Image (cartoon, rainbow, N blue to C red; front, side, top):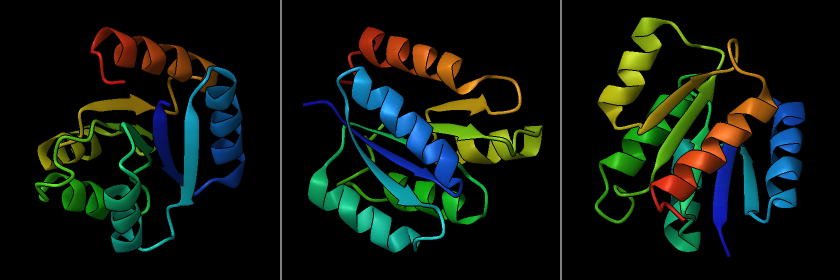
Length: 127
């Protein structure tokens, strides 16, 4: 099954994204961004999701990306950022840490993000 980890600090967003992705046939696991990045990274190593969707706010999101991309066991995990912290500095920092895609919550409704996300993962054979 197509396994996706979702990490965000907003419980309503987590629930909405989880429900929508589950309805499209994805298996999702959610984590709150206030969970230590090391704990989430450990679960990534254990459960081996196909894709990660995460926010970067607060800074724990950056730490998670760095842990993932600097570890050979998890470095190839595609990382999608979906964040309201979407200034150029935040985008550049995320990409420099190794994030593969960056989307702004300010510019893109959740349902449109899901459509684009699904299209990318199918077209790029990420799942």
